[in-house]
Length: 108
Image (cartoon, rainbow, N blue to C red; front, side, top):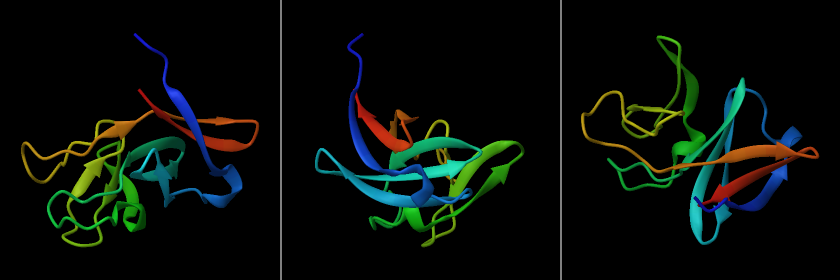
């Protein structure tokens, strides 16, 4: 397996806990979340087609960290990208890490 290529997106202090920010990584919109841990998903809501997940409400559903899309309120797992409210719907998940105080998103 090839290790991911990392892109610095912002200082970790720019992402308050239980919120998200949008970033452009290799031409793809990515939503980066800080919710106890760090997570990164595609910013695109597959149901509405809008790039809005970074503006969603972050919380948990039975212990699973989730973001609720601001358009139709469907919840997406921050761990897997799967939609908890619509079977067979998901968004891509990206590796994310904090290194030297900077948030980095990986591309496999």
